[in-house]
Image 1 (cartoon, rainbow, N blue to C red):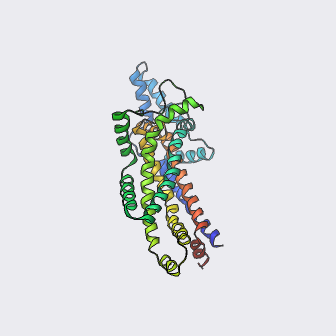
Image 2: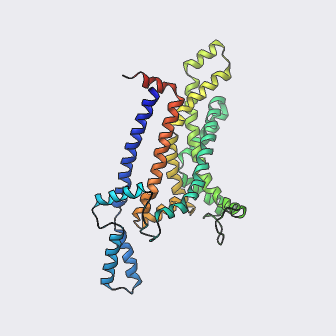
Image 3: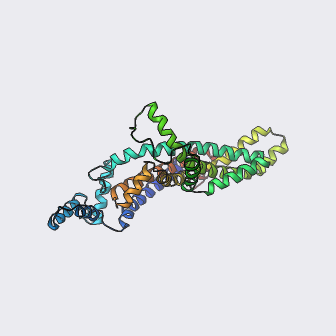
Length: 336
């Protein structure tokens, strides 16, 4: 009953947070100065060949096509209805391309960058932090200083440093892009071998920062647990060190699991900006282009995708913590 009550509360809060995020996801892009239809019509006017009356008709057509001639609350209801049907709308800036198709083209590149960075960074960072805390001495000092440095550098800044040193100065990896000019993406060894050379620099700029942050957090928690009363008590009783160490790192791991959702949110934001540094054709580049042209549907589609990833990950971490930590179940069972 305690676990069910805990999960029920987390589910309710997750739904509330998602609804608030949905409202912000709709309204915030509309705070960007300018009207996207004005931009489209202005491009047509600069091209020449269209009279003022024709431009007015085109303007009215696009306003009706995108639903911008309706009140904002009606636009929001239409937006929610489209989302429930899996339709993210039509791009303003790349009309008549659908937002679904644009995101489908960019998402695999971002996933190829973020998923390995999160998985490898979390595992390596926590192992490094645990080893540093347990070994101490020069191992701890070296690991702590290095981890603190990388965790303090934004991914895009580290990307610029790596780009300058490795791609520009040394010249062993490409400067930017995702694959060589003239090559078509495909699931074959030739394309993969070419694309991986463009993937390394953005990957290292993201994963090194993630490893640093996880290592610093794990080291702090492990040092705290090493000085706990139950550790000193076990050692006084002569309990095997391996048995005590197992509990030390299990307890130290709990805050790391809890903070994983926040870490993933930060790494997503950092990787999106990193894509701009390397001209990587992922969601970050697509979002930057959409912001420049006030492309509301594309902005909303990408931010909605990021919101879903963070909210679902946060809920999954809460559920996992509820199963792992018996103190949560006990606290919920003890409530009246």
